[in-house]
Amino acid sequence: LGPGATNLVTASAYAYLGGMPMMMITGQKPIKKSKQGRFQIIDVCGMMDPITKYTHQFASADNIPARMREAFRLAEEEKPGAVHLELPEDIAAEQTESLPIPPSLSRRPLAEHKAIEAAVEKLQKARNPILVIGAGANRKMTAKVLKQLIDKTGI
Image (cartoon, rainbow, N blue to C red; front, side):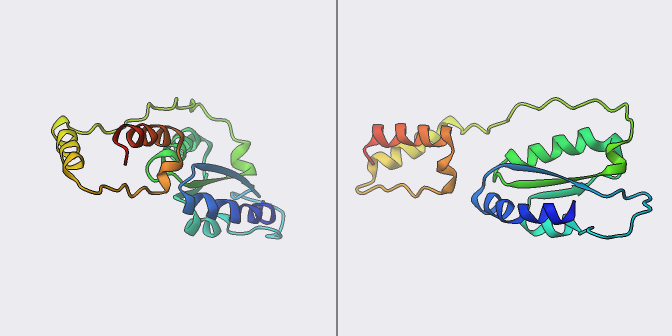
């Protein structure tokens, strides 16, 4: 609920700014009707909006699979970052016929062969080539490929 969700702010900001995928799911008091007062209810989606790529409060159990899949997709796509879903108690208790949506395969763009040849030619002609590497290089596969490039070219 609200007060507990506030503890996620620092982690979310770190993931958002650092380009690290992060999925947060928080609970919330019932939204359709509640006999309780508004005690301890914080606008968590509003709080998370500036420090996430996506935040959403479920209003129906029927859209949970689609929104869940969308949140994971956004968390993992370029540039990775934090996403947040809020699941109110009454929505969590609803029955639905909706089925989970399986994850889709990552689609990585491939460089055209001509572009690769042109880049290799420019590197070979350069007198003092340098590589300017961004924070995305901390990803396992990216780091591996970069190391291979550095070892092969001596840059």
